[in-house]
Length: 411
Image (spheres, rainbow, N blue to C red):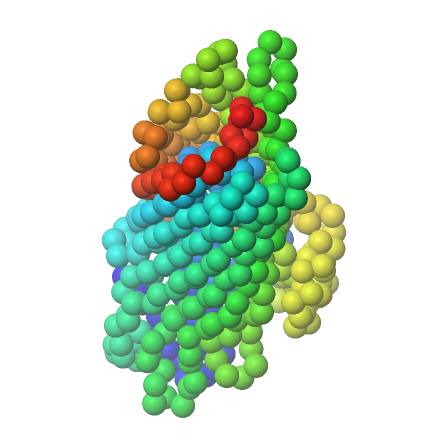
């Protein structure tokens, strides 16, 4: 359980809302910086509703949170909905449960998601995802420390996707999403404040290109390339004074190479690599006395914030490169029944300092599958992410005899 002190000003109200909404980022990246004299070179990117960018499904999180170009599955609506046009089965569904921040001793915080797809025909597919974040019990206190309210903040997002093949090897998808973030409940009722749940909408656009047949020496292989721009939408506000904050807009680029280790294709290994860049303004730079040095401090709009995010870092190109998160991993399948996974997630020490290894395993039949992943922080001592485990249950259903192309074999 967390405690938040309520002070009588809208600035403190806004801080409480953003503080709760970013617990998943701020605490998980416990070494990330605030703009103090001691950490003046550390400028992590802060957004509202960061739960939108927490990877959930156990397959991708077992590979270092890489998934924009992996073969399609029911969780593709989150990673890159364009993959759904190449799904092998007519219908797929997935349910994930993720206890959160167990490394801090928190026992009542969790994320869960339900996602799936439906293939209308060989060229078109529809996807959907619902993700829900329960932040556990929060005790709100006044300036004197007296408890005002016990409340369980909750956030959720609902998204619908449409994917279509534009050629034999290329597809595109669009996603629309509704976001609701209720962080303070009635904690400010009657106190002259005007707190409210934050609500807004966002959109994704994804691209997927596959080369189903390659030759690597004597081995057969396939190559996928993916790109996804997500969470692009109106800013979100928790108070009625015109203050609003950016969504965690994100650009993800990556590739996946799958190699058949034997002629019968019973043994396959895939290598995946993703690059992520938040499309939000970089914080300004301040000196040891807290005075502004350089960097844009204006309240940018959506479009200027997105395009400016590539050039606005006070540290120039060096800092812009620090804002790129690198995720990579490997996946081994035996007879499409058993999977073993490993990966690594790297974020600059100046932009959050999340660095961790991941492990995962999967057990699948033709209709059902269970995936599990486990996170191992690079600096595990008192790390909020230590012991993070995820469980994903997957189901596949062929409800018609419509032909679906297998992108790994081209058949």
